[in-house]
Length: 266
Image (cartoon, rainbow, N blue to C red):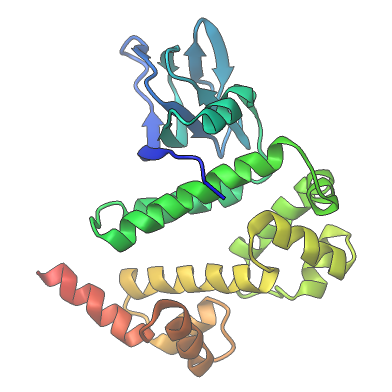
């Protein structure tokens, strides 16, 4: 099976805040996606049509369109260059803007991409391309529910997003399947199926990923001892934290902290 071809042009986070300057205008040269995590007064004017920056929404701009950025607003973005007919057809059929029930998963991927963008290695380039593929897959999965899991995920999108935010914001809380399902008013087995179909990971896997990410930040940004980091990030013990961290990252928390400190001194 042949895969459609595309290249990753730009991606990152943008803050459009200057209200004193006149709105900037330009010609779009790639397929540009903007993803909004909050409501803002500004937005974009595309071929004379204003699209407000609204929470949980996206905007898509196509090559050849004229675009003006109207502050203030902030967004995550990714630009895709392609001449592949299958991809062009997919992008051209997408609405120019709309609600994204899986926007948190897309933003998480963009944040991971931003954390690796300065590493010009084959491994990092492959990782960035794989993240971009995952983002496009999430966009495609929302376009049209096909399977029963897709349809169920669409119907319960608010519950799934709420459960995912709860996991991210309550690392020391009860993140068991039973509790998450109860918060979502869904059967645990059904919740597990829907959540996994949307986020590509089981609730337990994603909770662990959130805890590992929080631990990595604490290891870099604080001098807290490992046992306190383990507790703050929701691990039951320091030994369990060390085991899971090494399993995910390849080195122990102590080694990870030392490695980053050594790199900062260079």
